[in-house]
Length: 203
Image (cartoon, rainbow, N blue to C red; front, top):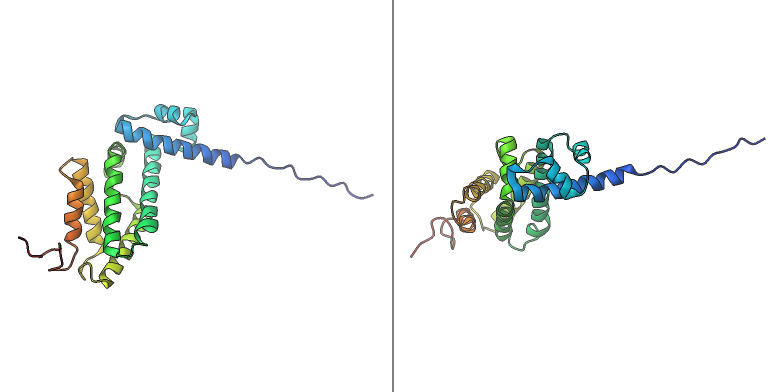
């Protein structure tokens, strides 16, 4: 007599549902922190996401963990913009300026989120893989711009990092026109005597 065989029971896919909920929470949290800043609390995020607060805590065990995840999401999107919109630029120096300007646009639009990140961690500077990837994009743009003769030979990725840190401070303290700051800072990367560059003759 042949042994009876049983078909495996199809497994449900809770992971897909869980991932959808996690994404909903992240997207909602980003908007809530953008609008409410450091005053935003977990129940507000849950309401905005249309889930229970327990669901929020299942994915993010603390408010700090949620803020960190939202910050990582933002950083990943900045890196993706650099890869897809700036690296393909015909002129690398223009691509680099567009990269820095995009960072300014994001920070300007999400001041409340930046304030939440700073309150939770003492700084808004990205860390870990997100920072490494962002600096890689900047380094690739900088290397190409050097080959094109559009930036100084001694320019380094660290210079771009300092420009971005200054940009964040200008926006955070509302210290002036941040777009003007980006233009002037990027001009400082150009070779001596280049049009609009450091050391260029002024009228």
